[in-house]
Figure 1 (spheres, helix red, strand yellow):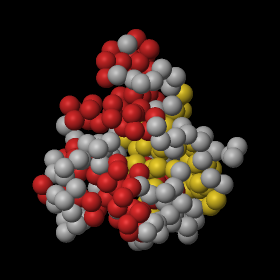
Figure 2 (tube, helix red, strand yellow):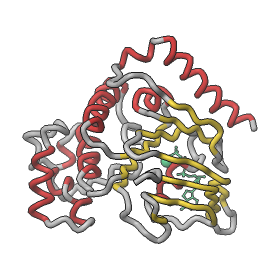
Figure 3 (tube, rainbow, N blue to C red):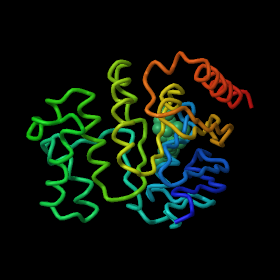
Length: 255
Ligand SMILES: Nc1ncnc2c1ncn2[C@@H]1O[C@H](COP(=O)(O)OP(=O)(O)OP(=O)(O)O)[C@@H](O)[C@H]1O
Ligand SMILES: [Mg+2]
C-alpha cells in the first residue's frame, strides 16, 4: 500500500440555490498512511464541507476525493468520521452511543459492545458505561464521541473540531490523551481545527486554508519529537512555526 491514505485533488464545490455559495475552489491535500494531518482555516472557509466530501456525504462539482485509492463520491463509510457536533443520542446510554458507528458499519452487536467495553478505560470512561450523555462532562462527551469514531473499523479517521467546545485546561489534557491513543493506533487522522497551537502539537503536517472559497494557502511539515508535552508551546521552534502559520492565515485573508 504505497498510495496516500487520503488524496484530494482539484476539489471544487458550490452549494446551489438562488444564492449559490462557492465553498471549495481547487483544494489539493494528501495524508500519507499513519500520518496525523491537520486542516486549519477561518470559520466558513469550507473545512467541514471538505470532510463531508471525504465522508461521501456531499458530491463535489469536480475534482478527486480518494480514501485508500477509492473515490468517496457516493461512497459513505470508507472512513471513520466524527462530525463537528458530537451527535450523542440522548436516549442511549454511554455504551449504546459508543457502539453506534460500529453497528452501522456492520460489526455484530456483541462484538462491538465487547470492543467498546475494552476501550472504556483508555478513553477515561470506566464506570460511566451505563450513564446517560447528559450525566457526562463536556470532556467525557467528546471522549465518548471519539471512542465511537475509533470503534468504526476503518483505517482513516476524520475528526471535525473535536475539542472546539472545551475549556483550555481540558483541551490540553485531551491533546496529551489523543497523542497517546493515536500512537498505539497506527491509523491516519485528518483533524480539523481553528486552533494553530492545537494543530502544531498534534500534527505531522498542517494545511492552511484561505477564507471561502477555500484553497490551500500553506502547508507545513512538523517534525518535533513525540510525545509532545504542553510546554512545547514556549519553545523557539514552536513559536516560530506558530508565527508562520498565523501569517499564512492572515495572508489568506488578504488575497
Ligand atoms: N448544505 C449547505 N448548503 C448551502 N451552504 C452551505 C451548506 N453547508 C455549508 N454551507 C456554506 O458553506 C460555507 C462553508 O461551510 P463549512 O461548514 O464547510 O465551513 P467551516 O470551515 O467548517 O466553518 P467552521 O469553522 O465555522 O466550522 C459556509 O458559507 C456555509 O454557510
Ligand atoms: Mg466546520
